[in-house]
Image (cartoon, rainbow over all chains, first blue to last red; front, top):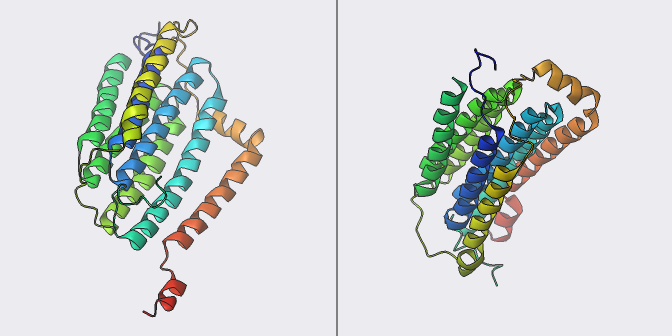
Length: 107
Length: 171
């Protein structure tokens, strides 16, 4: 064991943290009633998955796992731009951000 | 040292995520999401992903969250009203969350290959990362740049005021 770097942390802890963060994101997606906060919960889920990618990349010394995270980040940035533009368009059309009032397509 | 940093920043991460759920004002949720993303950047550093830590800070905690806070302020989003939520969310959603968490935790904790993890402390340098990225994955990289360009154009097209609709309604 390297004395400078100290005790190694089991990768499973990172993966557990990732799973808990993902579940919190899903719960937020379900309970939040503001469309912006719902969108933030989606970002939280993406971040949780990124953490498990980085943990696995570290576990197997694989650079490609980190590159996958890089691509996820880029796609998430594009998704955030488009999603927020859609939210602005919805607000212009319906003058509300509450997801309960945006129910035209609800069965 | 690693252990202490891991506990501090994973605690920050979880606290920020729980706070995101508890806050009723979107701007508070956005700020706690920034805390989550910054703590995740430190965890990436602990895992030896230095470039990703920087990218996480710049892209996520910087650019994306600035976009979020900007939209929250632009739309003057107030305190959200709490409703009972949908029936489908209660019947299917929450049991599904518990099931996902239980299955993931069981699989992770019973995984055999993960026990010896973290001993070899490999730090992936940015040079290694970019070597793979620009030699083997150049085409996906370029395609992603196109994707971002299209997304920006789409965002501008979606968010701009629609002139034709105003003309039709006679404003």
